Each structure stands twice: as structure tokens, then as C-alpha cells.
View 1: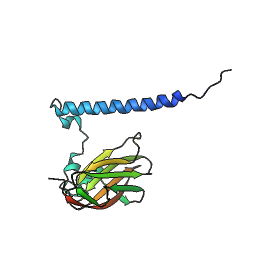
View 2: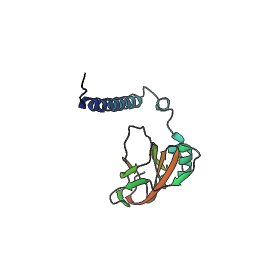
View 3: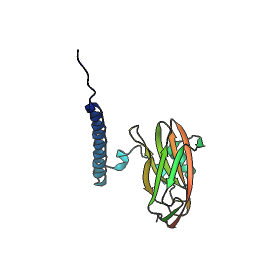
View 4: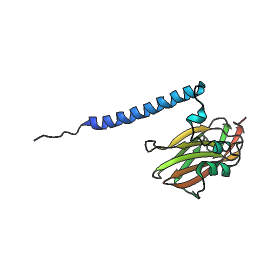
Length: 172
């Protein structure tokens, strides 16, 4: 009779495999960016799925339409959306911290839009199941504006927003 002793190596191997996968992805992405920036490959061919129309849209509605298509957006309290420190004011609009978190299952995409920016879509991130929230990043804000966070989870869109005042605009 063989006794199976619980082995910490099983958990360690799984963690190491996830770490290796993440590192391989980061190296691949940085290599791809380096090759693309050198002019050896055209970014349009590399990023064929890039939502160009969404990033060049003039209004929040047009950006959402180009990025997410026709969908009803439900205002929802299941999204936590934080801006800067303090949360309603930024000295420099060139670097405004944002944080999005949610307990919603199967979060697929997070988009941040700035209503009064020349191009409202500040960022759009497609998530994999391996990504854990909260999602933190920095955005540029041209002037006092409404900042909108849209989360797609299980095919449903959820939206929340915050207002922010800026001293120095970040979009020249």
C-alpha cells in the first residue's frame, strides 16, 4: 500500500507554470513592440484587432459604439471606480491614477473614457481569466471632466463614473 503524502510541489509547480506563462507573454509583447517600433513590421498588420475607430472617436457615445457595439449599459454599483488622491482633484492632468475593481464574475474588458478629452477613450483592456482585479493605471485628462469606467462581464456592460477637476490639462 502506498501512502500519498500531500506535496507542496504541486502548488509550486502550478504557480511556476503561471509565472512562466506570464513572463513568456511579457517577453513576446515587448519583443513585438520593439520589432514594430523599429519599422520592421507595420503595427496595423500586427494589431489587426486594434479598435482604431474607438480611440479616434470624438464623443463618448461614438467611442463606446466603436469599441463595444450595440449594447445596453446598466448603471451598476457592482463596480468600484477610484480616481487619484484626493479622488476628485488632480494637480496634473497628464498623470491621473485610476483603479477599477469588481466582484462581478468573468470580467472580459475594462474601458476608461474621459468625456472632455479630444479623444474620449483613454484606455481599453481586454482581460483574461488569469488577470486579477483591481486594475490600476494612469490616464491623461485634458480638463475638468466626467471619467467613465465601463466593465463588460458575462456579455453585460456595467457603467459608473466620477467627476474630476484638474489644474493643468494633460492633453496638449
